[in-house]
Length: 159
Image 1 (cartoon, one colour):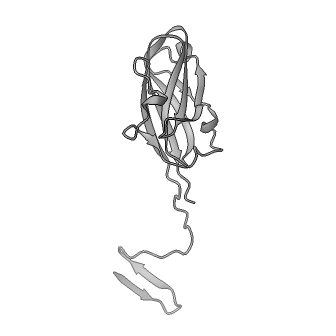
Image 2 (image 1 turned 180 degrees about the vertical axis):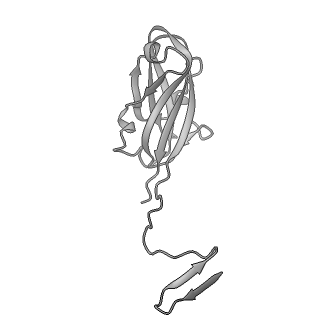
Image 3 (image 1 turned 45 degrees about the horizontal axis):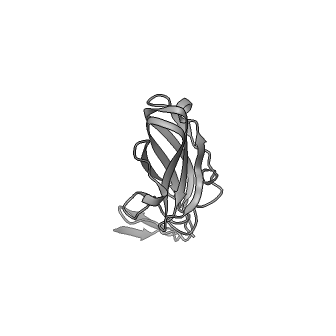
C-alpha cells in the first residue's frame, strides 16, 4: 500500500489501496437477478407442489420483466396457460401475477416463440410480498402438448 499526502493536503493512493466514500459512489445497489423455470404441459408446477427445494423468488423481490420462450409447440383445443406465484404454505400470492390465460396455441406455436408476460406482478410497481414465492401454472381448454421456459428478471430492494 503506497500513499502520501501532497503539499496541498490531497491524499494520493496507489495499487490496491482504494479511496473511501461516505455516500453511494454510483455503484449498483440493486443487482438484477434471474430465474428460469421449465413449464411442461405434461408436468405443470402446481400450487400443491410448492416446496422448499424448487426454485423461488426471495421475499420482497420486484419482478423487472418476464418472458416465456417456447421449447416445444403448445397444441390442443383453445389451450391457455396461466402463471402465478404461491407461498411456502401452498397459498396463492397472485394466481395470475405473471400472466393470465396466454393463448399458447398461437403465441407459443413453434420452438423459439417468445411472449412478454404482463401480469400484475411484472410491471415493476409492486414487490411479491414479505415471503418467498414459487412459480406455479395452470392450463385451460384442452392441452395436448407444449413446453416452454419461463424467464424472470428481478431485484431485491435494499431497505
